[in-house]
Image (cartoon, rainbow, N blue to C red; front, side):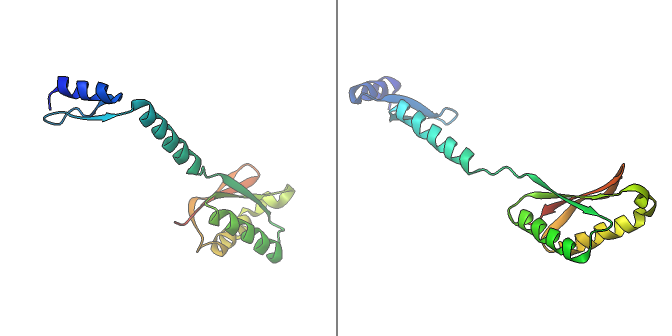
Length: 141
C-alpha cells in the first residue's frame, strides 16, 4: 500500500503510522497507537530491571586459631552466600608473630576451599596483602 494511502488510513482510525522495518524492501509500517506502545515498552523495561539481581561479594574472616567447628560454621554461611549467587571473599588475618607462619595460613585457606569445592570455584587464589591472606570464591553455575 502506498504511503499516502497508509497515512490516510491511520488518520481515519485516529492512530499513528509507525515504521517497523526501514531497511526491508519495501519498508514495513504498522498502524498503532504510539503512546500506548511506548507505555508498554516502558513497563516491560521496568520489569526486566526489577528482575535483575546484582551479585554482591560477602566476606568471611578467619584466623590461624579458628578451630574445626568454627570453620564448619563459617563454611556453612559461605555455602548459603554462594547458593544465593553471591561471591565470597575469604580473609585470614594474622596477629602478632603469626606472620612468620604464613605456610599455616595458606594450609588453612586451602582447607576452607576444599570444604566449599562443590559449591564454588576459585576466582583468586590465596594472596598475601599485609597482615591478611585474601581468597575470592564465586558460585558454580
